[in-house]
Length: 366
Image (cartoon, rainbow, N blue to C red; front, side, top):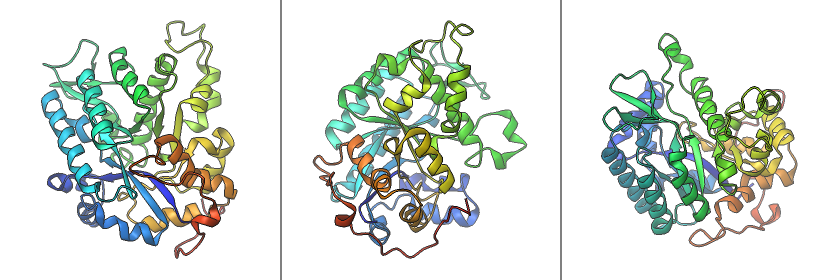
C-alpha cells in the first residue's frame, strides 16, 4: 500500500545523537547515532516502502530530563526550531510534534502555541514524567530516586492551561515512555526499557491522567500513545469493573463515565514497534479501527520495510488497513490542510497497492 503515514518516529539533535548508546546494543547504537539527526535522508526508504509522511518526535527523554525550567525550555525551543528548519522544504513528507518542558505549565502552553502557529506542528510530545530540581519543585511534586529533585506528573490541575490551549488549537498530545526510575529494575536492567518498563510506567501515568478528570474538563482534547496501547487496551473491561466509585469516592473522574468512554472519544493508540497480528486484531475488536494509527518507531526499529510490509500484509480488512495506515492520521492531525495537503478520500486503488519486498508476518508467527 502506498500513501502510508507513520507516527512516533524519533529524531535527535546532532549534538545529542550519541545518547543512542543508552537504548541499543553497541552495533545498534552506531546505526541510530547516524540515523537520528538525518531527517531528509529518510525520504529514500520512505519512497521504497510506500510511506508518504512521517510524524516526527524529539526522542525520549527530551526536555523531560531537564530539572531546571530555563534549561528545559531552551532545549525545547532549540529542538523545535531545528527540526522545523530540517522539514520546511518537505511539507508533504514530514510533520512534527513539539517538544515541551513541563516545569512551568504556562510556558509549556506558550511553546505549544508557538510551534503550532509558527511552525505548523500538529501536536506535542511528552516523554512521561518531568524532572524538576528541589528549588523549583511545586508543593505537589512527587519524590523519586534522586534526592536532589522530584517528579511532575500531568494529572495535576496546574496543567489545565496546557490542555485548554491544545483543545483550542485542535492539536493532540502524544504520551511516550522514558527509562523507568524504579528500584526493581536496577538488578534487572533488561526489563527496564522497551521490553517491559516503558509500558508499565507510562501506562500508570496515562491512567492517572484519565482518572483525574482531564477529559471531563476538556472533552475535545485528544491523546495518543503507542506500542498497541501500552498494555491498557487489554485491561479496559477490568479497569471499568474495578474503578469502584463507592470504594474511591474522591477519584476526580466523572462518575458518569467509563474508561472505555475516553478510549472511544479522546484516546488513540498506535502500532509503534509492535508488529503483532493477533494484537492488531484484538485492538480492532476492542477499540475499533478508527482509534488505531500506524507507527513504526524508527530508528529504534531500524528498517521501515519491516513495519511497512507487516502493515501491508496483516490479515485485516482493506477498509481497516486504509484507516489505520492513512486516513485516521489525516483526520486527527488535519494533514489534509496546508502545508501538508494530503488527500483524505484517496482510495486504495489510487494509492497503488504492492511493490514491497520483505518478510511477511503471518498470524501464526505473532
